[in-house]
Every structure is written in C-alpha cells, then in structure tokens.
Amino acid sequence: MYRRYYLMLLAVVFCTLQLLAQDRVSQIREKLLNRDQSGVIVASHRGDWRNYPENSLAAIDNAIKMGVDIVEIDVQRTKDGVLILMHDGTLDRTTTGKGKISEVTMDSISKLKLKNGCAIRTIHPVPTLEEALLHAKGKIMLNLDKADRYFEEVYALMKKTGTTKQIIMKGNKSAEDVKAQFGDYLNDVIYMPIVNLDKKNAKAQLKKFCKDMNPVAFELLFVKDSNPLPVEVKSLLDGKSLIWYNTLWDTMAGGHDDDMSLNDPDAGYGYLIDTLGCRIIQTDRPQYLLDYLRGRGLHD
Image (cartoon, rainbow, N blue to C red; front, top):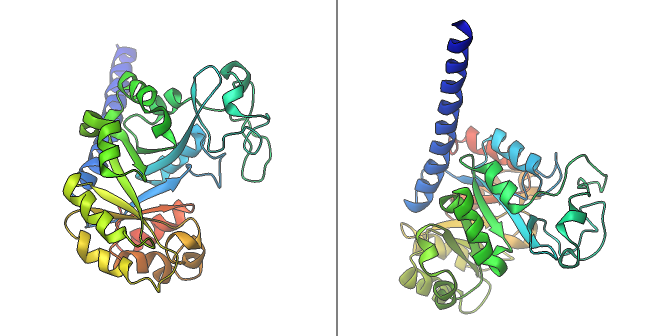
C-alpha cells in the first residue's frame, strides 16, 4: 500500500514539474509574442559553454538551471543526412575527430567526444538535433542557427518531437524571401530578421519588415556609438517589435559587450537596455547577466 502511494506521489510530482516547465516555455513565448518590455529576456550563446562543451546537452542543461530563457544552438548535417549540433563545418575544433562534417557519417561521429573551451577532451558526445529537441522540450526556447539550410528536415524533426512552438529562427533574408521559404511555418516558428544598422538602407529595411511581417523582434548590429540610428530605432520599434542585441564581442553592439559589462555592467548591458531599448540579450556570460538583471528587477 505504501509503495503504491509513494509511486503515485512520485508520478504527481513528475507531472507537476513537467507542467511547470511547459508553462515556463509558454511564458517566454508569450512575452515574445506580446512584445513584453517589462523585463529582459536572456539568450545563452551555444549554451553555457564556459562550464560545458559548446552545443552539448550539458551546456543546455546548465543554462536551464540558471534560468536562461533561450539557448542558441548551431545545426550541421552529416554525410548520411543526420542533423547534429555543431557550429563549425568541420570536426577539428570542438571534437576529437577531424574532417568536414558533410563528409563523415553519423556512425563515425557518434564515437567522438566533444572538447571544452580549452580544447580538452570531455566525456560528452556530439548530440543530434533530434536528441537536443527532445532534451530541451518544455524547458527552454531554442534559437536554431544555421538551420535554414535544411529547414524542411528541421521542421520535420520539430513536428516529430512536438517542439514547433519552442523554436526561434533568425536570418538576413528579405521579407519576401522569408515568406517564400517559411510560409505557413511562421504560424509556429518565430522568425526574427537580422538588420545591420550601419548599412545605408537599414531604417527602410526595418520599416518594410514591420509592414510586411510584423516580427516579434529584430536582431540589430552596429559597430560604434557614433551611429545615431540605434538610439532612433528605440522609438521606431517601440510597441511594434522587441530589440535583440548580442554582447558576444565589441563590434556587435557598439562596444557594449560582455567584456565592458564585466568592468561596468551599467555601461555595457545597462546602456543597451536603458538607452537603446534592448529587451533580449544574447551573451557568453549568462550567469553574470542574470545576476545583473535580477539585481535590477528585470528578470525572475
């Protein structure tokens, strides 16, 4: 009797945790769809790669434990057509193998181990995209980079794993090209245009995307603060689309990157949030950014 009660209790706890996880993904998605500016959404670049190998399941897990909202992961395809997580087109930098991924079968890749940020072999295998989708299901939003090259195959895996509403795609394509490639998939998958604010037609590009696609957010890039457009864009997109900046290195957001933020977070992250209206930040230092945001009441 007690054993049955104990098993029932475990089942209830497990189901409750699953529902809470699913609710968290739904909450993040709703914040995006509602253009919620009450806080700042945190995206972790290739997972928590400072503590685990980039694009590994463990790197995703640690980002989830921190409370990160979105994990950016990269997609490549093997010789026999299996989609895997890896940034580079070759195995050399991040695994114990060598060669172009497109020339190596999954059977061979499955025998390799991932390297950490110091190029040291770890115990972690190379995950397939399907494994990653199932692993992250209901736990965190996923930004799939380099995935548009194989989108039909990617979407098939999303459908198979039930993760279509958990995915963010980004790219440099025009609104016409995006609609032509993704079509009705945009009812599920969130697409964010990438716009370089240093280009002459940047403002017109933003207005056209707003008119033709009404995107939930834009990823914006600029090299120096001498460009007046980033400040102007804050008002231009207010209430229409959220603003996403990357703080991975200095030339992505006018120098207001992770390195500046380590020295002075108000000058780095704070400037992007307060002066430029940024509400999504992709970082290589997710825990540091989360601590800063929580200290300001801008993240749970």
